Image (tube, rainbow, N blue to C red; front, side):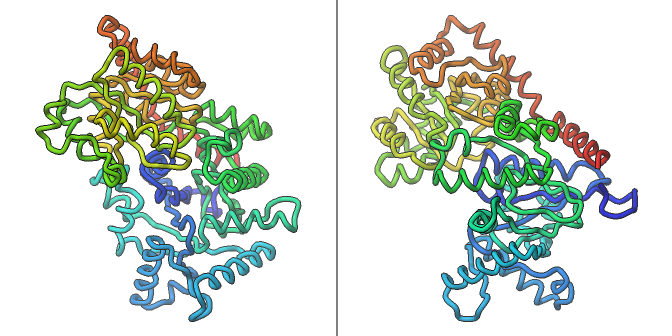
Length: 507
């Protein structure tokens, strides 16, 4: 599927980078790592990044007009684009019109373009002049500094309407049409567009959409997500439109693929499984346990501290006094699907009956519907037995994984689950909920418990902490290290290359 008749032309891939703006781990992390690895595919590939705001309106430009501009005009336009991506500024359509009315007018223009099939053109961005912005906002959270020059020198395209507006326009079409009516995006210069979520746009020319499908949670477990009706509708209708447009689906696990096929069985021949890439920052290292306690002290959540709930460790000396204390570790955003309440209940009972000095360290930001979990955490934070950490970089998280008595992954549902694999790569013990994706991804590198049974979780945790079970513990560690090699870039990049080549040949 080449875009010209020249058989030697490079395969052109456009990678959606919008999710990279949304956080540290999970889909944002996979977005950064996938772009980084696509840039390593070889000289026969041309890989560009697609920039877009999540909820504001990005100042963009017509590529033809952009080329005709004087240098200073292009620079200030790109500078305005950076400001807009950072702050969500509204594009001025009518001078001096209030922002609220600008947005309303712009949305009506988008509706007209959707109904008239007028394509949205992608703008050009001079990334070489704004490398600091590109690096810090899109890549630095997951990529080593040695890759900065290579990644920021990439070509980037820009979509003017925000992602939320693209979803809104598509769903708005349901008022007039039997199915959603998404905006058309002028992608004719590309062979593939790779999106990390169902993509709310129609592509043009011979461009093939590749949806990196992470999970069907908004459809199958809507009670666990925030803003349920909106997210469910956005996910389902964009996914349905992608299915109908002959998109390809690359799922991050067989469990995710099974969920997708339970909703749209007709796409079976267009699906494949390629696991998530794990960051190279996770490996077995020799930092002392005292380093872990220093990190725990330094990274306690600022909001907890503001409430006067900071655990009573304030100096490295204090951290050193507790360097022999054992702790369980959980790494996840606080939201219902992650099942924090079960772990808290199990840990409380383990601490009460068998291990009265066992600490609990929870790493992750507040997501949605987190209040019941925070309420359970607060008394233990005050007592200095539980630590809630945020903004922990991978280099420090590696130390926490290494020295944890066990990393617990209690989720009710996942598409992949990075934390267990990361812990395995660091030589840590892992206990996980007995759900299909954990069995698939963690294999024999984890102990398993029923995600709805506190007693079962207690039994598994006690087994992993018992000195007499050292042989089982060591076997789990060794199995985990071996199993985690499947998720290295060197193992997964050839699978992506083979997938792309097969689908070029089939076109």
